[in-house]
Image (cartoon, rainbow, N blue to C red; front, side, top):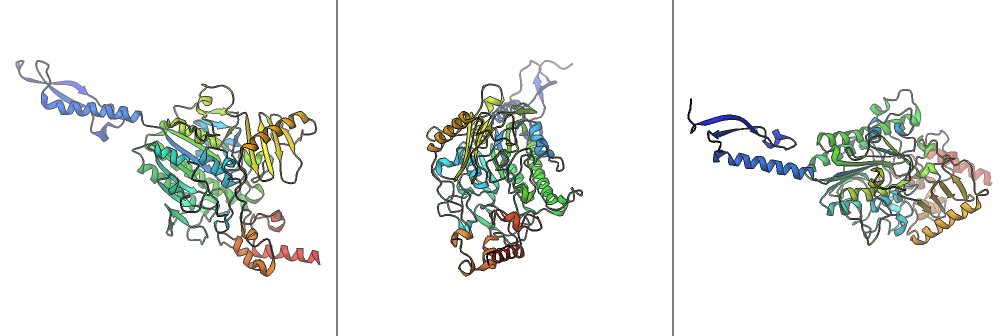
Length: 543
């Protein structure tokens, strides 16, 4: 037998608590000890290295949570499986609700794209700084259009807190130098600046794809797929620090374009509905790719995720369904502003929760800051509310007792279960949403006291807001609405409106009350022949 001065190999091990020991080299380490129990000094570096790994693991556990906001475009309230869609599966987006929270009364801050996105990025009613209307095509937009530099974006706030910040997709809240995504807090942006563009690679469009301000000309993928690719790459590059990803889809906004592989999933659907289904499927796959990357990075339980839509669906043009709600995009009935709205933070938020109180898009902003430990601003208080205490049962009551909307002469107010709607050209209407979610029964005459209460609430809010700083501009406003040679003729005016140069006009490109009447084949777009025929008929009637 060897004496006590000899070395004895023991089974004692030193283990590293690092999340991935093989990667750090801190697996089980055999230790050789003297017979008297004293460790040899030559093993001290190994022991110290193990301690450092444990310390690194502790720091990793304290990493700030990541934030992801998926924003759909023109997706109707019934556009997801979880909100009632029967013919278009959305398993990846639905999984966010399954693993987290579905908000039944989730609202956008406006009924059209641009102001709604401004409200999200600023965390405040966009009316506080006069951002009340869409821009129209970039080449016609008002000189002062855009989110003012005086309104910090969510990206700017999170970047200052040490976050990697990336945006993919549609911006639509500033065209000019100093107002673009890479100049408003995003380390990386891949997308476009305006309200709509083609999804198809190689197709001419007036609104170019850009990467951090530089035009991109070599995109080969369907646009929704390209945004997913860029988002996943951003997450991979940013894995060593907390990240904020804003994936602002232009799906399912017109133009109605989907690739055949996506449409092939829906052999029983036809026409515009089949195209819409393909566009939704592409968006759902994109969400799935991002969620999969978060899981692969081991960050699923450290990532707060939101998904909602910027406004309701324009059903007659795209088939995006707002059932059982009344109204469409560009209206303040529920169908124009109540959205599919879900959130997830695995391990933090309860799974499968259905939350029935009012929330609004700008609450994502406030909740993200609170999760990141960023103090909420006091110089310009947010209108958004941190939802976490309400969802975790730490705070009772409602996040909001009142919500308001305004677009020129039309407006709306929700106070509790009651809703006031003043649509353009209509008498003021009053609804009880608890009993009448479809806004079918106007109670203004029967409930004068309640009507007066909501009108007073709206008036008080309206006084705090700033007047609109611009109106939507397009070819008609630039030519004073004149026809004939003064406006360049029908063909020239058609080209002016045809923003993406595809030879067709969408409702966004050509917003007119006569759109449905002009759209003879009900395909959701207007051809030059349809426009010519419409105005020829009008001329005949005036003779």
